[in-house]
Length: 174
Image (tube, helix red, strand yellow):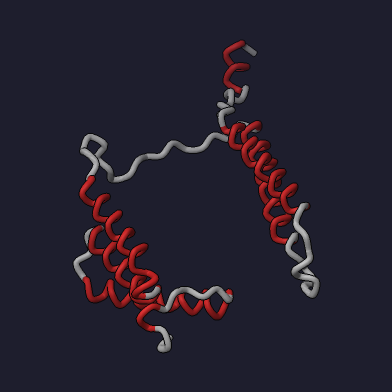
């Protein structure tokens, strides 16, 4: 065999993106921090709870550590993520700061009115305002969707989680 045939049969050298090991380190550190923090939780308030307050943080810590290990193996084996092909964004255009300012204004409106109007009304107006700011022209549909979402989240928090959101002007109705 010639030396050309040997070179053709050897596998090509794999690229390694070792910068991803920084993410591995961050995931591992977060996993350890969550596990240590969970180990310091007291079970004074949940004596009747068979699972206790430590179960979920331990599960999150275990998931973070497993993901760190899997990513480390993947990086060291030469797995390189595909480069993003890009979106339909023209990077030569300037940022639309008026849209950002409108979204900030809608968010400030939500913060200012949630205690007075209540979550259901303020959340519906927030959703509709964001939708209109981002280009939607169906304000009635946006208001209906926002109302359905805000009322659903109001009841999900109140009934499902036991966390009361402000009812505002709808106090006694919701």
